[in-house]
Image (cartoon, rainbow, N blue to C red; front, side, top):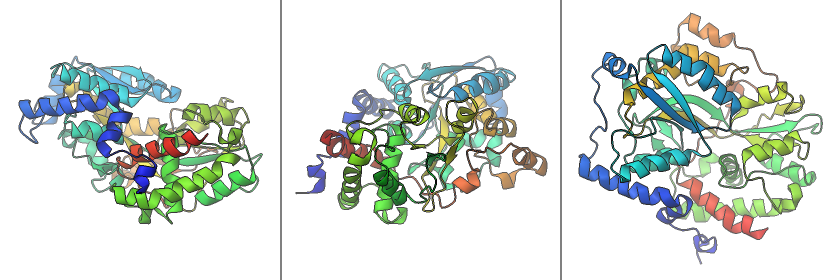
Length: 426
């Protein structure tokens, strides 16, 4: 019997239906709306011939940015740094906090289904990965706009982290915001000789029962951990096809789940339960219940140490076999009524001033998407002058031997199989 049947892993269509029950139906409807309203590959939304057209149209607009609200530093950066900069250009930026990016996409699909095609409630979304792919398949994004942004000239046109989003070609449908590197974190007071490979981390967990765990899929961080172990158990990312297929899944995933099944008894609470979110994982670490954790957002660690949330002995591991790397983007829904204003915000977010401010550990600590080699000497010095974190290594160090992300279709497939085989076995 094929392993996909053993795991009861449904087809890609069924996975999307199971993981995104409202999303899938709406996506199909949105696709139908697109087919009726515009020819294939036609630009959606207003047409702008140059940046001055955008600026004129944006003046006085209010842009609602829908973004995950669980990051206090990120919220403060948008409210206190990015929003005033947008206001100086005649655009009011309002942050709409959400629990999950899917909430924004569901809202867009619901509006498109209802025929609300030009005045949607979502103007800009902090997005990447499977959510971007799903929206693109439904033609729900405004595309072919990023080339108009003046500040895109400082973004590399060949950086694979920025030209593809979890294997989905960006195609001018989203503008880069910052880079991220999946990181393992440990308490150096309790871990004297930290492991330096993924397999070494798992071995350490087995040698130190109860001091390690990971978030349950489909939490974003927990899903990234699954992909990290998949690479390790497969002998490196080079041995895992980026493009998803049933054949690759059936061949490679058994080793992943065998390893996680063997690991489970050594986890926190003997693997009888898992943190449901990365925030819960961080709290376990902060409370001293575990000595090692993981994050796809190491930028927040410096502030968490400084404010006493995490111990001052918190450190980020440097992993020899590399960790996953990706980028976050801004997407504009095709039915936004404030597309020009959203473009102004996205362009401002790419300015040297904003990228430097956002990279400061005291502000947010996010890694820039700008090509530093393309900057003037004066602008480059602004990045060079940023304070170094005692907790988080520089991006150059963290991204050494970086592993590319798999295509977005791998994510729900692995998540679903984890729930079936690992979570159901508790």
